[in-house]
Every structure is written in C-alpha cells, then in structure tokens.
Amino acid sequence: MLRVVTVTAQYARSPDDLFASASDPRDLLAVMSDIDVYRWMPNAQFVRGMAFVTDVTFWGWLKIKGHHVHLDSLDSVERCLQSREYSKTVRQWDHLITVKAHPQGAVWTDQVVVDAGWKTYFVALFSRYIYVHRHRRRNALSITSNIQPLRIT
Image 1 (tube, helix red, strand yellow):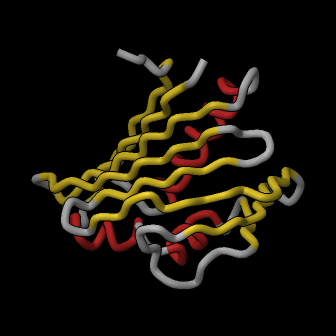
Image 2: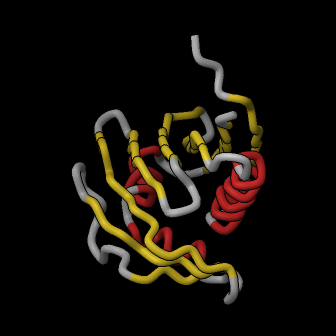
C-alpha cells in the first residue's frame, strides 16, 4: 500500500527566502552533508523540467544508485515544487514542497508519496527521518510529521 509522508516545519524566515532555499541544490547538500553524499547533483538553481540521475550514499554504507529525479513543476510565486522520483528499489517517490506565509515567518511542508512494494512502510519511515533531519539542520522552530496510507477517493 502506498504511503504519504508529511513533514511540516515552521521557520522565522520570510516565505520567499525559505522557498529560495528549497529550490537550491546547495541547500540540500549542506543540510544533508553530515549523513549523505550525492553524486551528480546540479550545481545551479532547480528549474521546472530539470531531470537528473544521482547516486546517494547514506552514512558511508547505504548506497542508492541511479536515483532518477524530474522536477515536474516549480512555481516561485505560489512557492511550490513537485518532483517525481524513482530508483531501482523505489517505484515512486513523488515529493511536493510548499512554503506558505505564517505570522511568525513561514511554514514549509514536504509531502511524499512512496511506493516501494513490500518495503513501502520502511521507506516511508526512512523518508520521514530524512525530512525531519533536514528541517532540524535548517533550524526550524517546530517540526511535525506523520505517515498515512494513501487514500484514493
């Protein structure tokens, strides 16, 4: 069964500044530098339609080769970014980032739909761990997260 991972973090930053971070691969590399290494990441701002394949190594031993990423949409006005991702072991990793204004700054929400066959629940747990870790490294004021089955209506 597909799972939806939602991680929401509040920041004392402007929503435009926060979304600029969300669409910059250098920010991703910086907040993940303590636990993973990416090979073949773009070195410029993400743009709509961009596609790339990267290898990721977590903690020096967990290797994910050939992780495909396609940036389906990126809207700086609405502050949302949708990627469609997959690898040999993960059939679907659709990641939607939204950044909204909040009275104390901004709220960044990551919503990820995960399909990894029988490993889906474990991949969803890993996904939640990764996104919570990223927000901690960005010094979020608060972070909430949950994993739900995908409900198709």
